[in-house]
Image 1 (tube, one colour):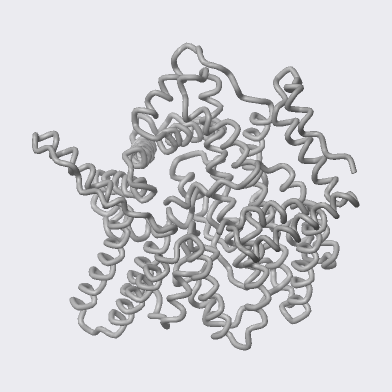
Image 2 (cartoon, chains in turn cyan, brown):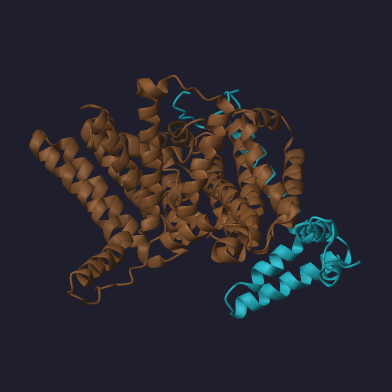
Length: 112
Length: 468
């Protein structure tokens, strides 16, 4: 085999390296950030909870929790929660397709 | 500040627009330099001056070498520069290890005394940035690259995407990119995003799940597990370390691409290798190339001087390559095992008695994978004794528990199956993504990242290679 030394991000140049591409990339980053904040609100509240305590972080934690509760009420995080519960169930499933009952019950997604 | 965390996400959300809004290339580089120091300082601010000092030494040495006319002076400067880098690495990474070994040796001769351990804290990424510094000084001495400006060298050694766990990007690859205003095209963006998401999946789902749910418990108490668990945990660790380390490299390459810079490939489906030599062309490519170019060829003379010198040089290179990974005998043994296997391969290929015996390709792949996995047992074990106990458990009659779950077997199988993908699968997918409108690509990204986040183990374990 050849001695590979490639640059994976080098795709064939199509002359699209102007401001329009920057705008395109910026829009993707902004929309993806917004989407993740909308549909995965618990990630924000968990992250804020892990910050060192202080007046600013207490305010941030309150905002994070408030947003998580609102998102939970309107069902924005439901898809993520269901998928997470399914993954946790798969984690515990043994070779006969069984899983411990008492643990399985705790992983059900909260109903909105 | 780990890549797959919200903290890094927020950091990048500030850096990305700031860098692209910079008025000039010089401002862009300054911004990236400050961002890189903030990124590094998030682990321990005390080591930021070490990083700056290391860059200053390499910049100064290379500048003096480039100006020097006298070959002996240039050679002396080269030796001084390499020695300075090795001293930094030696002190922070190996001082306690060698002090401990010296203490044990003295005890053996009846001169028992406690070794003067200093409990030196290992700065994150020191093995990577010192190797980068050495390659720069050697390349300037050899005339492969011109001496670069201070800002470029500071950024070369501090650039946050590769700073803590590589790839080891050489001056010849990155400095010319720093000297020009970077441009972003759709191909780089789509490939960058794809590599980040793929890396996130490999790290957060495969590597973390395998580590926390199976590999770590089995390796911490091998005697409590049956042979099947031990064999599968060894395979599991082979998949885990690949998915962990290649994930970091993928994300580093992807993040650099979003900032307009190109990093070289660091992994190329290593477990499809049909020989150890091929494995080292596919695994941690930037390190194996570094060891080949600067240690095996430059310092030891490579294959010049006959076959016994070649075998000796291979062994030395791999033993030192093992020691590079950490100050422990298990890493030396791991390197020695790879060195011995490389020597056996060479002898096998050249000896008239064995040359005629040709295994089918699939058998060579299976054999190579098992030699590599055997090496990983020493690499992963806490001590040589633990590794032997682990191997003993594999060959002994099964008495311990079998704890492996269907999900773990599926993840191991998946981690191996991805080696069957075409080499250009990622590029072909990126080619398709580059033509999508921004909302569609962002929507797809959100969907995939939500799936990954839902599947990942709570929290993120540090990358294995951070401690190297």
